[in-house]
Image (tube, rainbow, N blue to C red; front, side, top):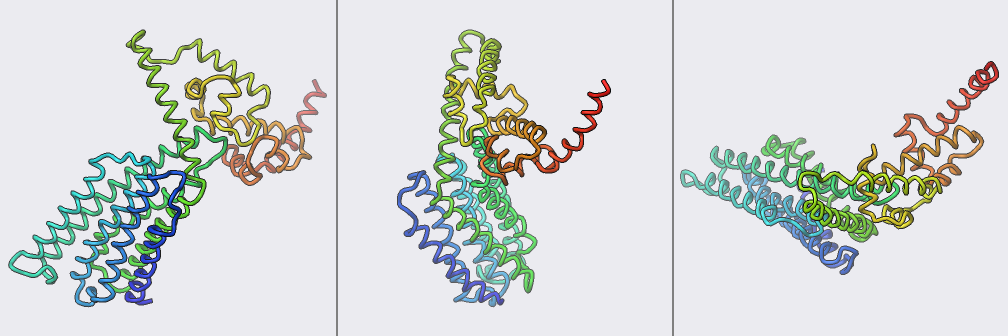
Length: 394
């Protein structure tokens, strides 16, 4: 595959992605205007990438010289990567992106362009002349791009962790897969930024490999965004976040009330925690924790307490969050069943313990115990005769 073929393929692909983002996606989604604005940021990124591929393919800048190709790539690719990162951040923050986070990328791009112009115009040369000054300016510009891209990757990584925590504190099983594309997109964009300075003036197979990597990274990020937007995932994330925001608001209001009473101490009331612990124990004794598909709000309603009260109590446990805590209880129940009922199938135990599927039960059990359910059952079965002998001797 030649560089021209990659450029032509990239041009067509970006054109199709731009049309999909702009016209073919549903006008209304679960996220409303938030998704709409994020997709226009993505559409702007694909449009810039389309223009870059078009210029490279039609005007043959790379054939004119390495410096010319690098100049065009930096002018279009940097704002493209910035808009992709900002689009993901916009989704994560529900549109609440701070002004300095917007302006940071714009300011960095303006500085980068000024560096390129100054480097190109030094000693009266043209912007497309291959001079030592221009090459130095392009290296500086590449480093500026790497820094700003890593900054947005850090923001996105922080946002991903916040969303993942909200999901873990709301649903009864792992929902992290619906956000996996964000994590991978951030990683790919970070790697592309890190590889820019050392591969800036690369030629031959190295240039081809890096071009393919960039193209596939962009395609993955945008296509995953499209799939995410038309799925039920945004609604599920919003439900988890809404409960988290309500809980935080309630906690802030409670803290304000406590400040008026005890300014120096913000620890939860011990009596209230003990009362909540008793309520939770009764809920567990009734095996309500083995019902599949429950959320923290469902559990709080069944206990007749507020979600805030349950969340505060969960923070005193080893697991701290709803999903890890509930999973721990279910695994303990599964262990008891495997030990007492060797003849029961994994499907029956998974269903009885509230796991969404046999495969999910298998993965979680192995992660927490280091054994598969079958291996655990075999181990307990092998221990049973010696236990019986010990009892008989006594």
